[in-house]
Image (cartoon, rainbow, N blue to C red):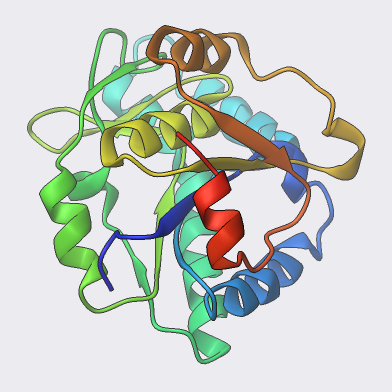
Length: 217
């Protein structure tokens, strides 16, 4: 695989509300991988976000901020691992990207970090042996590889950021009831600032060559 003709899908929190949604999404990814290459950014559901915030709160205000960021991103990292495994079980070559090496390098508060840099060459290298690349969304890293959190709506923000840096069409997968909802504020501002076109969808579907050409960044 190379990143030529790839599409980036961000699986937002609302697409993960149903407990069976992960298996459904894995099946859609496996089918879509027959027609085009995929980079998949997967976040955590709102329930999972709340659980991680509750656990982080138990650490207390004196806890190391990077320890809290590590905990806040745990659900998304576990979801990425599960999704990559499910896609592989369906016979598709997939790779789970290590966030300590592939996530965006961030600046600012590690609990509400801003993505600034991306090592695109590492994505290209990872794509050599896989049809689908999966990475946890809402996760950043310091230059030293310590994990940071992009905060509320972070999965969508990191998905748009990675798509912009890799020059890929961006599609955001949401729950059916959220198709007409606005993007989280930081994601909306990022897309506007960079003139980044994106499409909101409820499913991951195969894309024909003609349709691929119509998805313009």
